[in-house]
Length: 92
Image (cartoon, rainbow, N blue to C red):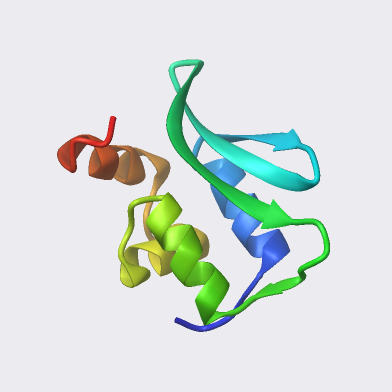
């Protein structure tokens, strides 16, 4: 997967229904109907570009394939479409 800017990842996650909690990292939790789910990922305050290794960890945390994560970040995958994936995979 191609490297991605942290700001692009953050914008995409917020647009798709994730909420952010600031700590030593930015923690993004998926919220559905106002309820926080167990789906979450992290962005470090000090990293501006996420390489393939970090994106591989993120795709595991979000229960996505590499292509799905790319689509989530670059927005071909809508928030509604993303919400169907964890449900289909019995994660939620």
